Length: 461
View 1: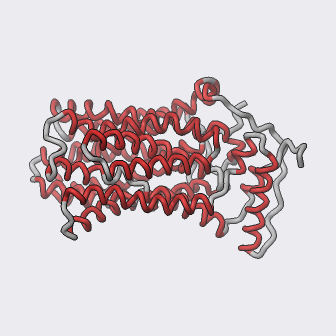
View 2 (view 1 turned 180 degrees about the vertical axis):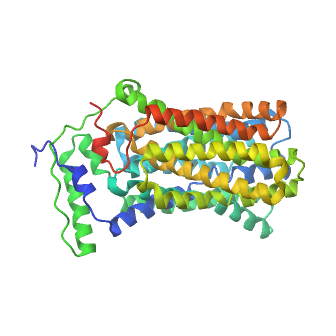
View 3 (view 1 turned 30 degrees about the horizontal axis):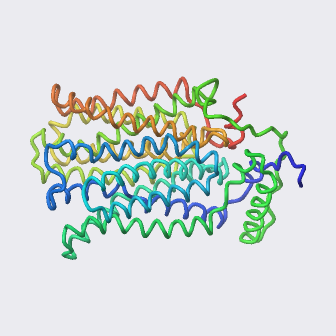
């Protein structure tokens, strides 16, 4: 085997029947995503630091930096985490970023003051930004092209329960009567412990990607892991595996980071960045500005929070729908359709909101959140992660994720200006404009990936 130059990993993986092995890989990945919620507890911890123990004070730069510090960390994590993952492999990079994230979470829990906490807050964002890239993009290498979108959507569905779960835990901690000085520290420690469990699963159950090994010229290792996977699936199904569809062997190229910015990959870099910029800006606006926008329409704080909460039930519903239809619709068609749906609902909500009343606004925001989170699943878990050659998969996905984070730094200023100068309903119109711009980019620059093998998607000659 020492003279092997190709072990046909892609064809061997793509012909595998759905099995317990695929379910195991999905559950490990989804659990790791579910429990890395340093972003999910940000609001609850900030509330305690601001209103209970007064490490933060209203109107101060330090308070404003709470979210910005974390976002900056995520930006650089996505930017550098991808290339590192393409260099050292999927399993090693997941473990590396998990360990950094755990250390940062524990460091935050034991911080003696807010300045030390901010250092760990930056490190938390950096580790999570890198971890999300490798978990979403790396997972696409383990599942067949024919149902890759369905598996990735299921992963997103589980992972997106992190926010409601960690906020529920925060409420539970409050009900126990624990002092606020200890409360927020516990909130950091719980996901740290759960992430340690995730690391154990990854170390024992998660093999290195044979596709990545093949792309690095490590053919014997790739073949050994692939053979073990095939034997495990044959044993669990009790049936011989389908024959391998032998294709003309194509050399698996090692691509440098610079390859993302020239030729065919440049188009993917542009459209992938725009797709995630659209996701981040639209999702951010609805998640963070909805209560204040409703309040500006005349609803009191209690009413606006109530309406926002019920509107957000559209999030898991949307991801569930996406997981059921993801592999039934071409990727470009689905992206454009979802963006058109967001634009239409955004315009309708903006124009009709003042006359709808509470029930009408809840229905409209539920529908809008449903379509937005279908798009979140499509963009972050499926389309952008799968559009890259194996040797540049994490680099490409990481760069696009970083561009999406950059938009989160600047877009809030535009939202604030629009809301103040034109009015809250105009923010929904702004969402529609962003959606239309991204839809046009997909039409003219997008690449079709549904049902295609990783190897065919990565053929950029």
